[in-house]
Image (cartoon, rainbow over all chains, first blue to last red):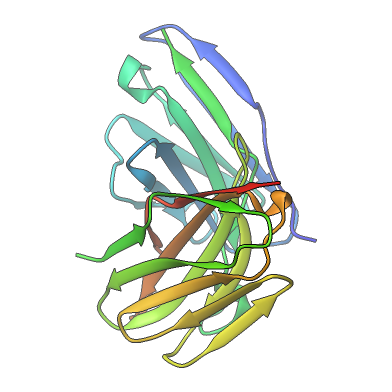
Length: 116
Length: 112
């Protein structure tokens, strides 16, 4: 079974703090993704990575950065947390082969972040 | 821009009462349509991928179908444990297009 784990289930941070969210997958997947999920807006892609040290912006990258130093690990960084970054953050990974089951994204359990 | 619209937003059914959820999409060159189930406070759980119009996939009480403009998730004789939010997502064609565009989901409640 594919397993994607996230470092925290719940986090409470103060405005202006630097926040690190970490994601680890154990299936040797090429691609990793960070989404945020908000009521009425659905899942929106923040960043994704298709290889170590490679990253691509998603739909809403402002205020975020990412790091992928090892294949199994993908970190999301909030450089200076703001209240509008309060959200559910979801990490996903996929094998990356086109046209088949390798394209399926598997999600972690999520981190619910509250910025005060 | 790719768009996914799911309806209804919420659906309440009696146990055993079959129904369908709708996912309408606009995408340039569909490369895959994905259905996920999400329980409150948890990450989405993969259910199905459909690639071409006319394709169908089944899993227990769920059956997903695909046309050129929409997908349906049919739920037959649902049980309370089928209560969840069901999400639909699409991927467009073309090299390097790994991004999924998600709908906002249908929140399904099955009443015992």
